[in-house]
Image 1 (spheres, rainbow, N blue to C red):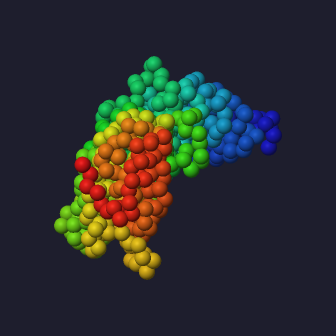
Image 2 (cartoon, rainbow, N blue to C red):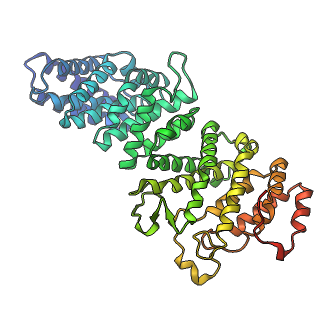
Image 3 (cartoon, rainbow, N blue to C red):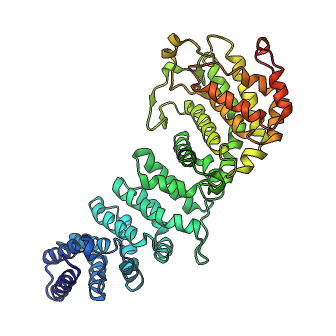
Length: 484
């Protein structure tokens, strides 16, 4: 349908709609007219058409009637649904319609009142109406800064309740709205809007509602919302203590994915814009330093908190998000923190405070590697290297200790990259022979040989003292050296 024909059809249908509402309204006829208008706006050629003021006035009248009269009026529920579908479709790819609807009509406030009324009543039969209303709001804010400000100001108190709905689609669409508003407000703060503050109870309830939704089912828009909050100062320090281990694993997985993207895309880190606020990574480093000794308990008769490994029942989602024994999740949390810190420290330009200034993290990694290596000298320990090909099949790749030595070496290697102070620190802690001892193949730590060699390279780059230290080590002396 060409634009002229579409425009003529919409004018004709709008007149019919107005006429029907002025007489003894047959809501079924109104629904059919609205469906025709909605279908016209679905076509790409019709999206350049501007919504008429007459249609917006009619839509406002219908919403006001719904809010004022009994919802039991036959056909009125479906009429409201079709009104939101029309509005939703008209906003797709049309900034003119976004602006016309949100700035020159009563519809945004009526939509807000409608949503609040439905949420207050808790009606389960209004989920389709709610979904269409939220989709309309979502389409109205796409690439529209002014509308994002308007919607965030008007609807943000309602988002946690919408996310708590049992309807996954409704939560998914709500996350779409939240992400489109948040991403802009974080990157382009508005003087008339309160800055995004994770200490605000409303923001905390929003974050927890998003994580609860993601625990039940995947939502790409929900992940986008968490990515937005990772750019907010002190997000982790405020929210991490409130999260259970399953929620922590979810957030850590999002952080790892965010950090590894530029690495996989081979971006030039000189031009790299950090995807996570550095304060959030510094808090993770602090938590890892304080709690890392828990990982040593994995080598105690293969138990965790006194429970035999084989007695723990797992539910794996993505990597490891859930475990029936919640206390057993803590090692997974710490190992995921380690993975995140590995990805962050390889981006030495973006996170200077973490990669160059946190010598406590570097010392912690060396001492933990030392302790694990000592425990691993017992051939029955879960930390004992598996060097023989015939034994590789018995390695439990889902055990929390899997890959721990490799990742500690990876972290150390990243932190000493072109950093003389850190290079010297590792030598002073007897870390060089410790790392050289890890160059053998180990089925429990895939690619540990390669990471060890890279770490030694980074330790010796432009550091003559470390080169001499490496050269002075004789093969027969490559045993576990005590960190001092």
